Image (cartoon, rainbow, N blue to C red):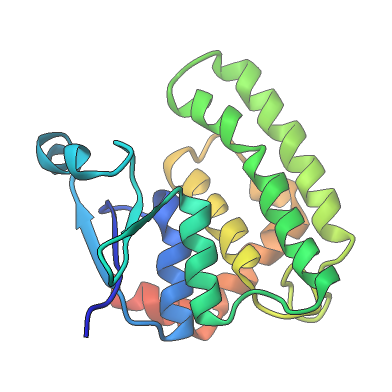
Length: 198
């Protein structure tokens, strides 16, 4: 039986939340990874929009944009809250974290770095404040609805920035984001995934 193929670089990045959603939900998929050299030589031309990631479906069609792919994976994995308020809280967390991508990209591209660091700190402080309003005190997840795709979204953003730009963010300054990160990292299926990648 054909299974979907997730195409992305051999690093966490914008596909990691989807990889984790598939793994956590026990959804079979092909995790196709390529190097930066292979991207330029072969896969950029194959990518539907010239960008990665993209997900090839069983019928030969595809889904582009990392958030759309994550929503597909989360649906398959049962990681989308059913209650309307909980679903909105999850999407709220993703949206407020997405606002951090702009300054993060500028830091990575070495573009007005000091200005970008200030902007990133401001946006992270807002995200920390908003997430705190609904965060589960007992689990550390974004809401009392339990583990969701939004927790993976926050986790993978923090994983990426602390891994690639360690000077751009001090996690102890954002206790609620840090709590989400630690809760996801300790989640058995997530821990299993990273153990398998060692």
